[in-house]
Image 1 (cartoon, helix red, strand yellow):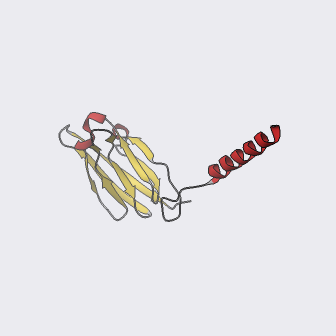
Image 2 (tube, rainbow, N blue to C red; image 1 turned 30 degrees about the vertical axis):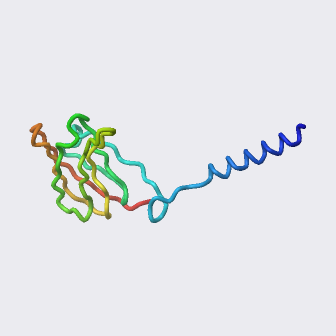
Image 3 (cartoon, rainbow, N blue to C red; image 1 turned 120 degrees about the vertical axis):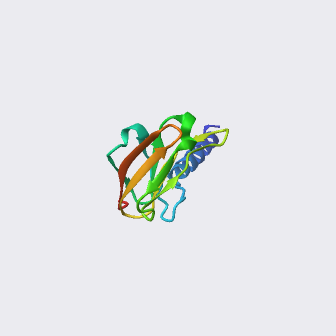
Length: 126
């Protein structure tokens, strides 16, 4: 009676091991980059580095994620993604790194009377 159990257990463990080795390929090259998260209140005058293909998560007050806009000096390097609240989840505003380079960003929330200026440096993916 122990042999069938051992055989079933071995097959199960092999299946788990193979499943653990599988990777998803959401991007062209299969790499998934973690976001670079920064507090909006800490951005003024700083330089934020992000690898090409990565994103910058601009974290701040959840109640006001939709109020932020951005002026990007060179939008071929990074593009702004508006924050939103779809009723079931809150999504922070962010920046998507398109190509290697450096650009200035002016992030503003006119309703709150806030603005910050900073640099984004997109580095080669390693």
